Length: 319
Image (cartoon, rainbow, N blue to C red; front, side, top):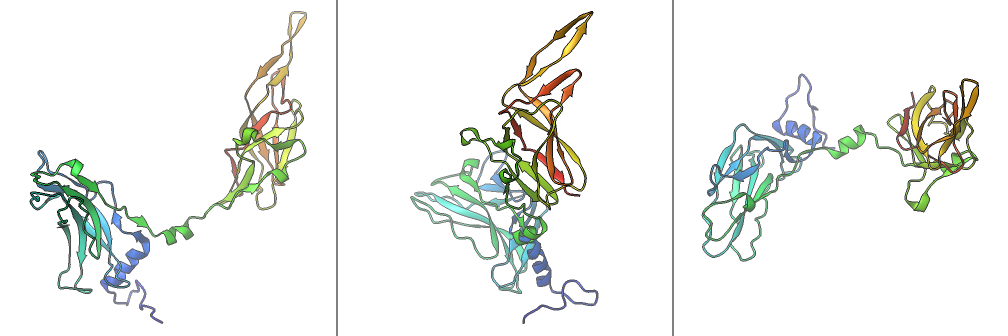
């Protein structure tokens, strides 16, 4: 057993810098920069030269020389310049610009962070140098033969982005469960609508206390005006604590409606059609999912057979 004691941080304990780095490493799972322009390498200004600019910002560097070395935080308060060694007369080379951490607890005598440049080997097909231990790359810099200045086109950004420990986020952020097939739960007047195989099958799932529905349905027989019709019944564990109302869109065939208005002593009948109609979807604590075909004024709308109803975007909380 190699349990480290005392654990960080007890009031009466004594703690090493390594323990603090291990705490950081438990939170930051991937070394790298912490903002868009941190340690960005750019050409000299106002005119390019053999100097390069290094942007201000912060980064995390993983110690790799010793097991459990931990994560170092390296902060740069102000932009500054670094120099690129004079070019080769015959061949190009690729230099590596990087952040390196030196820790005498692990090796050597220095305790510092540095921005360094390793000069690549001149070649007709140059390759960048290998990254040293306890470092993160910032840029590859192409130094053409006989170059007197480095321009933006010669700089390849190599900065990794720091990220939270994926193991930590895996437990803190719940994953949605796989989608369940809704088709077996449909009532006899409804079926999955997948013309040409281009649309999603109706499905349902639970994610972080919310039930989600998706996919297209088609009614087999017409739904009469002002009717509340059950589409499906959700199983236990997927039912709201109280009734919820959600709007959805139906279409496919015309939703026809007729009505009668009086003009003096003459009654007029007005047929009309709606190609798209928003109608409410009710979800009940017993799991029933029902639609309500609406009525406006004295005009009663009917949803004809073989229309469609979308469930995509329908969701509700369990509590």
